[in-house]
Length: 250
Image (tube, rainbow, N blue to C red):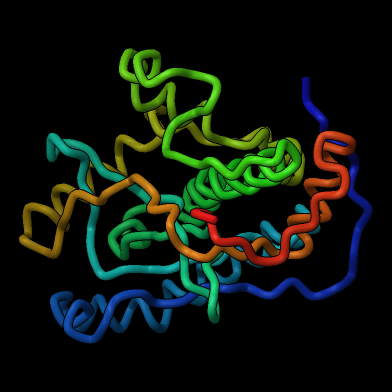
């Protein structure tokens, strides 16, 4: 059952946290024309969409990092558009979204927005699990749904596991963004995947298979507005839980 609550319009400004990842050596592997396009066109576009999602949801969305690559599936036939990842923020880590630069060249604004919402639901799912774990007096996180054994997970498809590790979009986003939620197995992505292979992979541009697992040994921060929202959503399940920064292996 959805726990969606109507959100009152808030006039405060929502910051857009979008940045480049990788170093100059990594970015120099990409043709200068494409690198310039990322910096002058793609990043501002990402910031606009990030801000728009935040304003519609009335909560600041997780940070986004763009890396100089294109991501393929393990069989080299598909495309990976983004991933949830711990991103460094000052002296702690926040759950955020890492996007390969290639994604920004092969999806329009509508599809990019849906991809970001998909990845943001993973970020918020992890935050919910952390808060629930703290309420139970435990701090255990891994890369699979806690309610299933390793044997159960081994029988599941990647899409099934992905679905179990997402927060309910109606809990975190505007009705419009929640209704338009994107599953990665949808044929909406087929044209973009084909274009990516034709105009990026086949042309020898930087490509890699990303590690989609998250390393949980880092120091983790939870934004104040996320903590408040989880308290509003889960109520008594997380009463009294107010983490500031925790070491996940404490």
